[in-house]
Image (cartoon, rainbow, N blue to C red; front, side, top):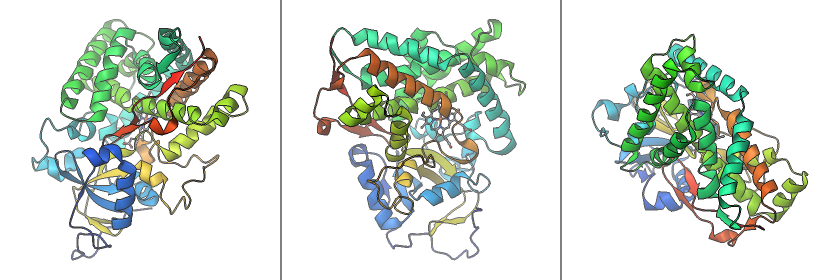
Length: 414
Ligand code: HEM
């Protein structure tokens, strides 16, 4: 489906429901505790596209509707990812140290490009991920899962967010990229801070780039079986900055696997039937992952796309250079595609959690393998695993982009 250019330049810029004067903040205390409440209120007030403010009170359009999100993601000519056309950026309203910069600013990486430039860089990343993965995602995941579990197995209790989900996917991905375990552990915190936004995001982004700059230098003289080497040797002939940018982008993109693992473990541990079904082999973990992908996609809001020209979307007039952010979580709950959100979706992977269109996640199989191994090893290593608090005490904290489970306290037999 092609985006329709506006034929009528006099179309008012605004909400078809007449609520366009005030923009809602997608950050701050309310967004941190009840993002879903905000999405549903915006849907009622504005329909499938709503005017919002991001950190620094930078305006954006939040796409809430499933079909409108697909229309944006599937049409890179009308809605490119290249932030150099972002009007607020071009006109100097986004501070250099804004937490939006690591998420949205242009960089020499595949996420920031469209068309042929995107195909060249994405080809190098996909080929590199494929061959690094062929050399053993499951093996690395099993190794690090057992190592993390060893660190708390004797105590009979753990917090599966801080002690397991926050670490395991990042350690596996850092290994695939070519880092030693200690460097992988340093990156876990920096990556989480970049995703969280806030004032330290830019500083932590610098730490990540420094570690990957050193890795790229090292692999030039000492090649290994990893993504860093794969990118350096790829026929697309990436230069140093492009190699570093892609190691960074893969790490940041893969970070969402930590939140997905936490949500999957939450689903398993808050429902005894799911837990026993998995242990007995009657339930397949992929069904639980699919449920999490529909109901709590780890990237709740995807940054971002920019309007290439004035265009109509969801009844609103979007102007050239406007920023759009894609509500993957509200899109998956759009009443037009899911009239009853309490009814689980089975055997349908048309959710938005991996994005869509040319930028759709190239690491999804790696992410899925890590989750499967992580849950499997945990359930088989820790007999009698159960939640140590009532389910209603589990809380989440959200940034503009993600809603993270605060903790998942468990106990088990030793
Ligand atoms: C399992 C959980 C994961 C989820 C839910 C997820 C989600 C996403 C989404 C929504 C996008 C689209 C971004 C956009 O359109 O701007 C994306 C892109 C990307 N993902 Fe994932 N991802 C996951 C795991 C991973 C892993 C494990 C890796 C790598 C090891 C990875 C690497 C990437 C890369 C490189 C991109 C950028 C692709 C491009 O711009 O062409 N992801 N991911």
